Image: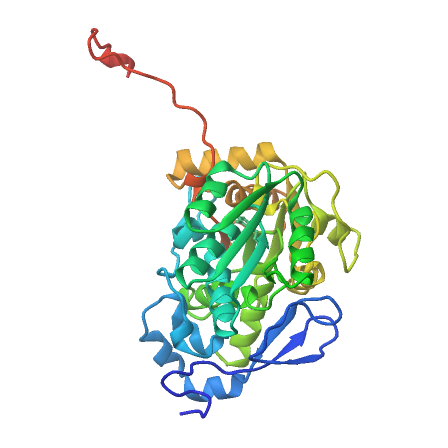
Length: 407
Ligand SMILES: *Cc1c(COP(=O)(O)O)cnc(C)c1O
């Protein structure tokens, strides 16, 4: 057994690294962004992982998120906070998608969204590193996941969201023990308040990618996909991109799996999907830029991807370009039509952001970016039950004669 790994110690982290300069940072210390103001990436001793975790040993473990613990940052298993992070299923949608389209349904995770993956990790690390108070800007789901996990391990949380955040998100955040404030602005305006409080030492800043561990949690989507595809990968992945944590995380996961010798060098084409009303990454992609400008007057029904400025923009763009994929924008009408098609034809209720990936897939099929024969994975990032649905107003008066033919 590796010296890093006793019964209570379960990881192989060596250090952290600035994603833009490569500067090294020590593990086991509290970090925000790097000195260059960019996200920090966690690095592992993958040789040691390879020596101590044969693939067949992994395959005997329960298929939850913690089966990947050697590739995750939590040092002491006692610091793991869990609400039951299951491996999410791949659901075919043959009628609304096509014969080779699978939806990775992340709505089954605790708090009903894939934010649980990132936040379970970030909160466990905050606990491990002695943080007692956390603040976060959110469009809804991240705040809910933070509230749930932080409350569970006794960390205080203050959450700021745009005042038009879906009502259910604001209420679930409050219900799960956070102090939540509606702010008359967008998510980056909320982020500015969090940043100011953090600079004053009032709390630790949990904004997307401003602490290093959410990426590690989101990375498990890539690890799971590889295992679910029998240690190969799909031809293309459509990912609804706000801060891009998941896309960046999956790209990192594939790299680590290749270094472990568990997959080859082939990669899926990564499609970063945004809404036409907020598409900074698409604009930067099309203009050949390395960084994206802030998107003014952002507006879309898909609140989870209404992110005008992403601090990891260059990491998203790099992964998309290296993969041979593209950044694609879809309009709100196409998003809502895709949600409806999937629910009515395939019985799977997507969230609007999940609908955006289906709309983008359909578009990519028409423009020849993907082929109908290609295995494709779309991410449904939250349960469709959190979002408004069209009314179903028909009522039946049982005291009057019933026209059964008309039912
Ligand atoms: C956060 C969120 C996204 C965007 O995820 P990122 O990894 O931050 O880009 C998409 N959809 C939903 C429902 C979300 O909550």
